[in-house]
Image (cartoon, rainbow, N blue to C red; front, top):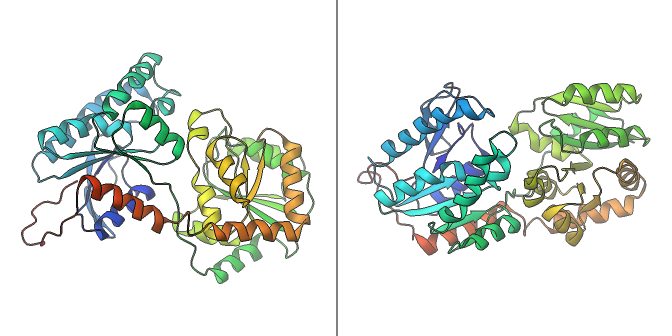
Amino acid sequence: MFLANPFKPDLRVKKEALSLQRAGYEVRVLSWDRECRFPQHEGIDGVKVTRIRVAAPYGRFLPLVPGFFLFYLNLVLKSIRVNIDAVHCHDMDTLLPGLLVSRLKRAVLVYDMHESYPDFISTFAPRGLVWLLRLAEPMLIRRTDLVIATSSMIADIAARAGAGKVIVVMNCFDPLPPLADEAREIRRSLIREDELLIVYVGGLFAGRGLEEVVEAVSMVDGVKLFMGGYGPLEGDLRSLAAKLGAADKVIFGGEIDPANVPAYDAAADVLLAMYKATDPNNVLTIPNKLFESIAAAKPIVVSNIGEKSRLVSAEGNGIVVDPSDVGAIAQAFRTLKGDPRGYEAMASSAKRCQERYSWARMAAILNEGYAAVLPARTVPPAVSGSPPC
């Protein structure tokens, strides 16, 4: 697997790697450590990771160019020395070296399309490069053997580009294990027994409807908002809460260890995914928060854009609102607080969705997709040599 981040680990990549290993494939992750601070060689839950140390900044285009060139060169040189049956490229930024390696090694080429990459880099890259990538992406997609998309809208992009085989593997989670004690402690530390706890754990960035959520919380009695995470918007959100007289209703938890996120989901009464259409990928993709809410069997309030809106409307596991309409958001919170029967109906709907939107189901789709282009084979460790990517 090729990956242009350091695999801290990247949750989707880790889950896919483990699922493929259980299906009989050997998997190695080759990732890019731009900060040169992670181990170069590591085993993470049985996944073999090699990190390529090439220093480069995040989010600044020109200083990134030489870094990408050296990263690509290292990917190719490290890959051609080992036996490879498939090259699995996560995101478009590894697809070009992946194509080259797949041709040199006569290997299957898999493109894991997490999002629309040209739209992602449009926030910081020159327009000319964005235009070039929009032109190049369909040509690269047509040369893949398998495209794995994170949503049906992303899958549609791949299909229109001429992909031969496309499957949808969403970022789902299996149902949460019992976390009653942990959840009870979190709730006790944050709210009174009669209050509704709304939880958001994620980046504090613009375009996620967080300002409107803070304002809505200030308008509704008996509701508290826990915001875990960090980002450039934190100062503004703190100032807004204070200005609205809601500093005691909005709790900032700072960075949350990913291992502790399930406990906060279990403690929540309501989760949030209020992304705005400021970024096309907010429309095309489905946020992890939606699948976390299903795994925790909790209602969710989502914005009325894209596939997440359609999913919640169809399944009835939450409330869909305009992310810019503070009054509508506040009314959603009042409904969840004041209508126990409606709340339980949404929670029950979320629980009914758990099998359909579970990682176990996604792993089965992933394994079936791989089997169609590369049947798994068990190789004895003593003779397997270096594992394929």
